[in-house]
Length: 250
Image (cartoon, rainbow, N blue to C red):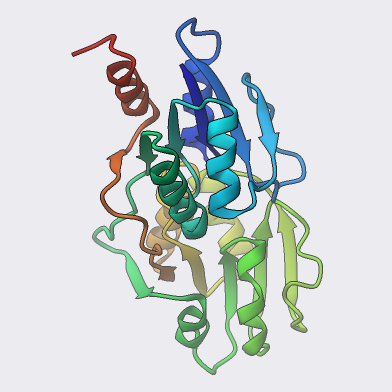
């Protein structure tokens, strides 16, 4: 069974590992290419876009893909819409592998917003020390609030994505540790954390650390994803869905 996994998440990697070497499946993992040094995975991998809906639909037909797993990042709204439209056009079954969002716990001081621009506004006019963990591509709106000091953590170098006078850039990759996150925030005298509601365990320690330290967290809500698509929350559940599609389980 030929499977296309639209990846870039820990769930995509877990599903690829689950399918690797399985005699019933022939998976291809597709990565957007935004990370220059992605972790190697044990299945054939392609890097780069497809050329919109038409390009993806053409790829599905040419490669005789029999099922698509959309395991893209929760904020990759365009790719998810393209996948839904292309699968409908090519008549290929589609499953969304979407990790649940985080939910506020007792002691959390969340400021929930809908966009990055709203996150900038939520920081206020008074200069603050901000731990900014929204990804390199989401940094430009924060240039509108240059009075703050930004501790920016990304996988890739930020380059000129945040032209502000007080920017401290660090490069690191999840998973993170709560004790280390707490120590980082204390050392850098962080006053507020800004993040996307990505969900998952790998980056949750910053949320837990902020709770312990009593710090407010400006948290950007997820964009809306296509409706009417089969959806599961784990790689194992995605594998079970494939088994049912393949006729191996009832």
